[in-house]
Image (tube, rainbow, N blue to C red; front, side, top):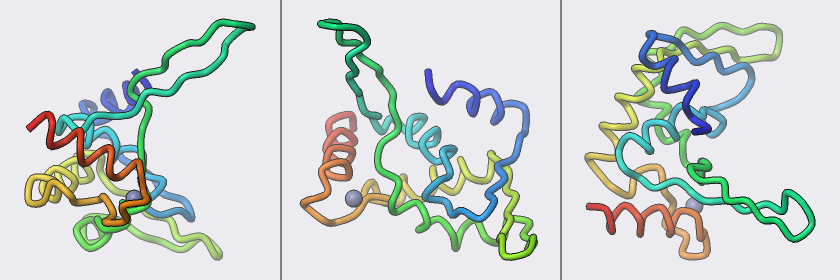
Length: 130
Ligand SMILES: [Zn+2]
């Protein structure tokens, strides 16, 4: 499972360190989505001539993950390293903020653009599993 190491990190009380990036690159949020039952994606790749492999539980869209910034900023330790904004936040806090946002609104962290197939798929799957 691609998110397995983050699952272990959550159990160990670990932290996420964001170095010059935002929550759109915070893979821990995908773990929270998975725990909430939001289905992840399947990818297919040709591994040899004529051989296709299925890779389940691949993380989906993340372009709205910065919506969690207001909830996570008070819980993060932030410093500047030159031009780099460095933030440290507990995995547990990321999971709780995501859980709270998605339970309050199943469309949280998804965009309203009907052309955004990944967000539409994630929302449809969420409804299907509810
Ligand atoms: Zn979208």
